[in-house]
Image 1 (tube, chains in turn red, purple):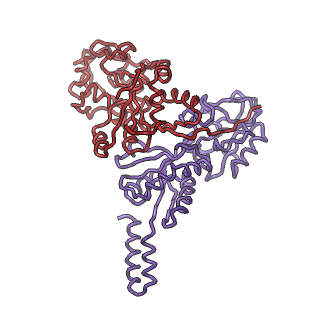
Image 2 (image 1 turned 120 degrees about the horizontal axis):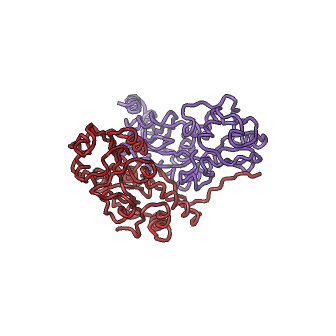
Image 3 (image 1 turned 120 degrees about the vertical axis):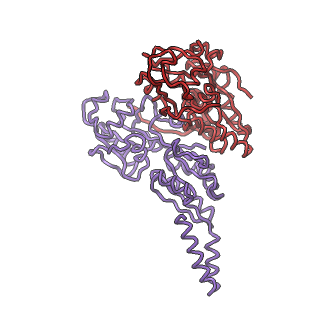
Length: 264
Length: 276
């Protein structure tokens, strides 16, 4: 016979909010952190990378979890309000270009990929595949992976073609799997183990070594953002995440690529 | 023009008219216009927490009228966008589609709901899907949950309980509770009922766990402060206050009160997890 009671220990709180790509890392690190610091509570909220940045700029959260760059509009707002945002990368993540496994195309150049997503190449025949229109699947613009894709593939110069179909979260993998003429993109977290076809870019496979060395070109950092001036408890948790013996060890144990030491 | 503005304008016209005729009415009018007001509306499920905070806030600010109205989150958000209210209450975060650059949502508490059974029942863990099936009346025998052969006796909470609202919002969505479920007036009565029936299953706010019943793990996660805050335990709901950039100083102060030491103590006393 066992019974349950519920005790709240935390009296100091550090709130985090943002990307679902960063969430599992912070859940794992946060679990250990709260065990080592029983007086600290870490409420986690989602909402995507854009919400992560916004919550730091408008001061509604302590730490934003982000997987892409801050949008130009949000950068402007931060500047206007005199808010200085500090970004600390905690892990490195590869973004895959994904196709249906039956697709005979196994690799593209970065330029070809840009042409496809900008709508300048519209048929698989132009890429050495079977003749047929290319169906493009993208995540919504609020998603950090979308921001990274626009930045890394389209160089922030060209918009994604309006013909692209928007799919939410992990459904992008399912959408691409179900369509033989599809192409899409996904963070490693969603694609690994799904059986989806992953393209080599400029001849480089997105394996862990190539992501860590950044030889694979579509690599972005998973980061924590804070205000430059913040509470000691907030800084302390961010430091814990970048600590080689603490947060970074947990990140490595999860199969992600760690980053030792923060960036200013 | 929104309704509140119409009412205020009409009110002052009437008062000005009266003010011309008698000093007393003019004084009343001045008192009236000096009073500040805060209109808060949104999720009915979260209303009781904000209602309690409003009461405490009004005591400290006797010159302020605060009206808290239930309804639903979407309507509250719409009213906020139209400047008809000062703050919207949400029992979930803004969706991507709802979010606008001028909206700012502040987390004021998190609620975890425990699935409780008799301490002697040898079931330690259920999936969220199983919990849903049981509460909806699709799973009716303990043997379907790796327990002994025997019917599951269901206990729930009456309309107006926030634990019930959480289960409805997070788990059941548009499915109804099983017809056999007996609705209890309070968490205390529910604990009592579950503790005295070896075949019982019910749900209560985590903070009402009193050591007489056993909470099962859901999707492999025990219900405790850590798992609720870290969003591992799935039967969890977040409460937010949303204001817009043009919001009044009073609205900002009310939000600040809700996340202050006193405000959070109050939220905890009502069964929420502190988040500040």
